[in-house]
Image (cartoon, rainbow, N blue to C red):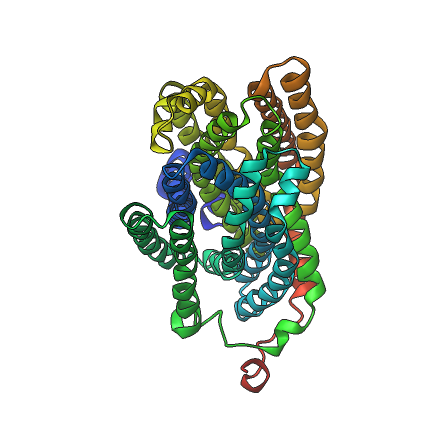
Length: 489
């Protein structure tokens, strides 16, 4: 139990030497806020930098041509988001395992779980490659414009190396994050982003290599940080949690597979929600302008989502660590602190994008028609930003507690049985076009957020501590650290 909480209970709200309880609350808040930002700050910077790779690529591609921009937007928003969602979601299962193991002081198991996750994710990635090889026929079958589909098919092949870069990227991030060692990820992400900006300009503007130039720079930008992360993990940066390659990685894979699949389903159902929005827009009149405008809005929204995902990471780490330690009160206190902080930042951004969202369109395009369409969508963009400041954080709580399968069912009901049908009716029946589709999607997100708030508030957190302990006892079968001849390979 947290010492301050224990002290308050024993003294009936009074601290030592007559210090009032309010001061103790202030101390707890300051301590928790520091712990939160140790994870949140680097996580936000890292996610913004990583997301920035795709945004920078799209910005340079957008100045090559409108068809190229629409093709890139379709691949990046539909196919890359699809694979990103699966692999990032599966990696979030590692957050639950590593976070609770770290809290329970079973630190030698973190490296084993990292290797198990590599095995599961590599196998999954092999099944995703055909999507990028068959992009053009898939998009045509979905009713997309033929010229855009052809261009997207060419771009998709360049994204195959990017798919495999997600495996070490996401897993190492989760591994380091649960130990609050994610500053190294931030440094690597910054270096990669800087190199990407220079290479994109050099290959697309200076030497006019077009799509190949932009994609070569993109591939390098995704892979360079991976080399640094792997070197840090394996060369002494994590001596307590990385003990070398182990045959234990091939043992007891089924629990990891189950949690990875439920985690992947939970996050994919969220990320694919925007994918449905893009696909529905592709069947409307003036599809090229609509897709370009919507992809720009989703990119802007994506920047804010990176902030929310940073708080999501903090919620996951703090909740899993405290549950692993057996401290339910500290877990609840962390949740309240993180949700309120994220909402305050989201509300500030809501006000900003409500009035200035349209002007940012010229970063991505030279077309005044596209910029006008973005300005028209700005109120919906601002509302999305506001709701996304809370919903991902609650998903982080679910990851920390291991509720991924429950949230997956919630996502199916709220997104695809409520949001999408309402969006289709408003967009096509009431002829509101992309606005109607987006309003429907926002309604689904709103319902999902309310449901997650209710689940979080109704949860018996003392019981969650017991669940975490059972999970430790069931999954951490190698409770005693393996001997050197067992573990190292």
